[in-house]
Image (cartoon, rainbow, N blue to C red):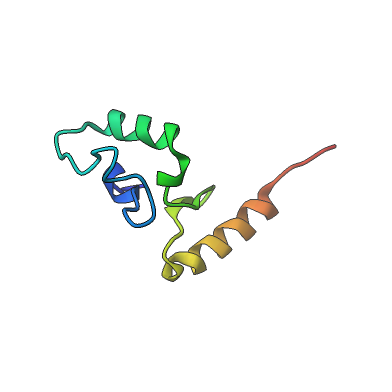
Length: 80
């Protein structure tokens, strides 16, 4: 996706500071562990399609997300 793990962490309205996530010595694995334990820390949505992976927030990214979602839907081969 080309984005650092720390860039995925929202600060406002989350336990970011209380958990000490502003500590720059924390590794990506430690940050991901915190995100798994506290899903509110995941700056959603992260869209994964055949066109690639994007963090679709803020709204400027939504054009890619809508195109990606449409492309992914049209590429599905659901044979139920």
